[in-house]
Image 1 (cartoon, rainbow, N blue to C red):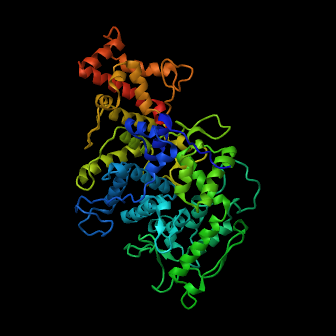
Image 2 (spheres, one colour; image 1 turned 45 degrees about the horizontal axis):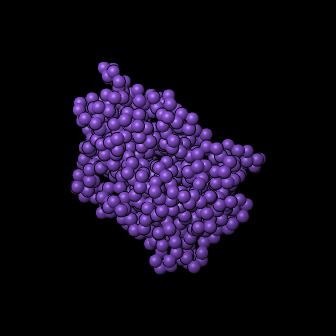
Image 3 (spheres, rainbow, N blue to C red; image 1 turned 135 degrees about the vertical axis):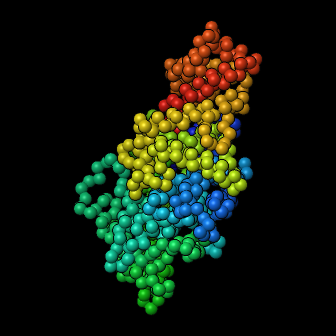
Length: 587
């Protein structure tokens, strides 16, 4: 059964939902703009060809980039350069140095770069090289909009399957999962295991009975496949100078261990996979070898054969679509959702030549993305707990925060983004330093998933951050934040702002995920109870007990423009109450 197309106008709640899940969030004006579009028109704004790649980060010690040209003794220390890379990547989520016409698509592409990072995990402390991290990041960026990625000579479209081939020889990945240690006669199985278990075919849907399999049979692959995969992947090394360039991507890639002509540490014998892969035989191509010896080209061709065999299995598309669904829709996948939405997505994925862009296009224009699947009573609004990244970048997007220019105001840019990295870590997201090889727990740890973002300590840090931005009081940050009064003056109609109850509803509408039918006079259908709305109203008005009629007093202060200090304090209390609420932690 195909995904159900949604052909009507999005409306405010669905537009806000799409923008939160794709570009972290939006100002009220952008939400209203997208509310007038149907899903396909909205996606046409997000998937745009020829969006420029960002300029590489700058080292303040030299005033220039080091990613392309390499480092010298004049550069900062290696650990500092790694931190600059992380800060630079964090800033890209706000689309710096782009035109307004390109910004939305630019940010959406960066969102996909982050998704690919959560899928093909990397740890900064293990890789230990900012340039390796940067070029892997560029690889993800190149493949994010894969329907626009066409090889000119053959007019062949590149796809997610090609990305898996490229990541297998990526310098950062060769370092992270010990591919550089994998040689003939002494295979290292780390990458082969994660390639099968995490990056491609997976182990099937978690939490269901998979039946009795023989020892070493995981239902989708076997221990024998790991061993043979390691032999296929043997004989490569990290290129420390990043001068060996992949012809298709134009990016640095791993090198073969050997004498420059042959891949002497590659296992050049035939390999046979298990019955899980139809007993596929992987053999070196004689035409690519040199006098019967393995070459870089013949060894790479064996990896190609392995990936092709993996992607011939239906479960590979299903596993990857589960990862997509969990990241963009919801963590819980029942057998009904597995047999419905996930298999529908997997069908699109396979039929569209494993295009990530195609399956996302189908998902984001479907009824299932917005309103749940047939027979499922819950919709998807407000169903995911915001990651610390979504919390920080989402708020910045909602108030149209402008970062310092990272090319001309480098130190100020790093001051802000380094502070954000620290705050994210305090909230449980140590960027590029996931707890385990499988990645950040929220994206894979069954059955907790995104609930792992919420602990007593993490929640305290979230509330502290929200309070600081609500009060526009970010000590040490070289960036101007809108005060609550400035926000209301810019984004709220004056007639609404003068009415305390209407203002509570409007700010709730703008910042919370559940907004349709929200109101004090609609207790039966409102997604927030009257008690909850009154809590926000009380926090807004009751600070100043001297007001005999707080709602009238607010209307007078706002319309007459008097006592702005009190108005500012009241609005700070309102924003604090809404942004520190449990509802605001959802997206």
